[in-house]
Structure formats: structure tokens, C-alpha cells
Image (cartoon, rainbow, N blue to C red; front, top):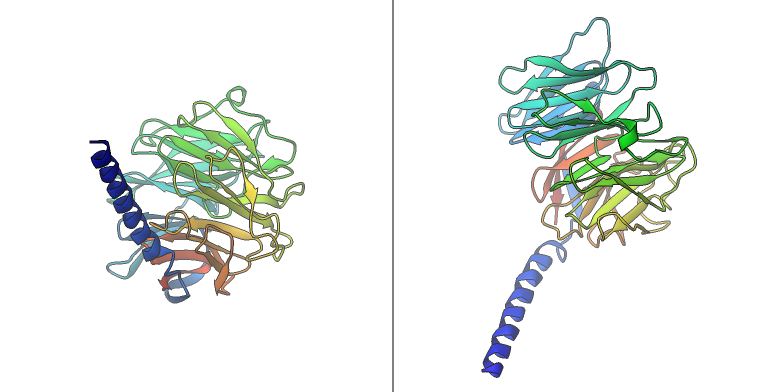
Length: 354
């Protein structure tokens, strides 16, 4: 009987290994080798915040503009919000099943709820303060969401909704970890908040560059140190992504020295508690957005920024430049081999070739 059980276990392990090996070979042994791009639209516009909703790529931009590109119908729909004489700059966007949410960066901070049905807009949160500057926004589910901004007091500014975005509450500073002097966040690509399950990670930069972690949707927080370059106003983590609840990647660097490709990228395999620098003096310099390739087992990663578009098939150990286009600020994958990217004056579709 023991021999039979042992044989069954060995057979199951073999089948499991073969299955994992097949998935691994399908993605990693056939890495991306080139890209083909087509321009979805061009305009005098700056886009740092995008979010997929089915076949639509919604975007929030400068000059009070927002809209979406329908990838099925190949059309762009754009609107402009009129609010007094303000020219609003949106760098945060998120969605629920019925609404799109956008948050402008500076004083006054206005958070808009937009109906997907008729594009009707409504202000659901407003904050007036000379220091206010919001950076990013995400939703856990249809009811609960989070937005983050620079410190107004001695902590990051964190907004929470528990009612689907109809109302937002700012977490009192006494309930949050204090930031160091000169520590803030960057509104580079709506990617300094990452959500997975109930967890959320927020990355900071400036004089300190750390990771703020909550396992319970923002009810309590822990802060982890990182080895990313820090100490100056424009240094630190600009972007982050997690493949699952354990494996994550942060990137950024020195915005004022965009070719500096050391101390600008790090990985974690324990949910952000510890970070290790990787690919020192290799690959890209300053990066504004990082995204994991879907179904790549955490091995495929793409970044955009000042160095162009870079790709790794081995979890960040080695990098290949697939495009020299340095005008892209943000990127999101539509499927395993197609992504939409946006930035200065355009939105493009990227086909990754194996």
C-alpha cells in the first residue's frame, strides 16, 4: 500500500511539474523580442492616468479633460469639465461597475464621479489647502476605494470610500504612520498605489523612499524601508506593481538625472517587507510606470519612462529596450501581448512580438 501511495504522489508531482513547465515555457522561453505600435490618437495633451473598462481605455488628462478610446469601435470620446475658470490637471483615475472617478492634483482637490452611461459628472469630495496634491487612486471592489496624496500635515493624505465612491473620508493623521521631512509621493502614472485582495501598497519618494502597507483595506498600516535612491526632492519610487500578494516590483530613480540606472529598481518576494536592488547599472534609468506582464508567473515586466520602453523576462535580472519612445508616462496591459500606453500628446497600442 505504501508503495502504491508513493507512486501516486510521484505521478501527481510529475503532472504538476509538467503543467507548470508548460506554462513557464509558453511565456518565459518565448520572451518578447520586439514591439509594433499604432497610434490611437494624437493631440496636445498630457495623459498620466488610464484605466481599462472592458474594451474602453479611459483617460484623465490636463486642461480639465477626460474621455475614453473604444478599442472595438476605434473611436475617441472626449469631454472637458468646466469648473469656474480652473484648468484642472487629473493624474488619478479609477473605476467601479457604474462609474469612473477622477481626482485632480492640486488646490482645490476635486474628486469627480462620472457616470459611464451619460458622462454626467458630480463632485463627491473637495479639499482646499495650499499644500494639497493628490497622486493616485484605486478601488478594491465596487464599494471600497482609496486615494493618496502628499502630506498636508505630517502623514500622507489618504482618502477612503466605503460606499461606492459617493462619499470620501480623509483618514486622520493620528491613525497613520508619520512621514519623514521631505517625504511625499509622485503623480507620475497613477501607479503609486497597488491593490491585491484586501491589501494595498503605497510608495513614497523624496528625502525618504518607503512602502506603506495595509493588509485590511487601509484600517491599519505598516511602513517598510527600501534601498531605492533617496535623499533629494526628485528621487525615490515613482511606480510599483505586484504580480500577486507576495511578489512585487518598484521603480523610479532620479527624475533630474534620468539616465541613472542604479539604485532605481527593486524586487520583493515577501509582500514588501524586504526589498532587493536588482540589475544595477543595467537597463532603464528613470521610470514613470512599471507593469507585470499578465500570466508571466511574475517573470515578465515592462517599464516606460525617460529611457523608453524596457522589458525583462527573468523578473528583472536582465533588461532589453524594445522602444526608444521616451514620451510615454503610463502603460496598462489589455491582454498577454497587447498594452495601451499614453503620455505626451498621444495614446498608442503596443503589440508585443515573441
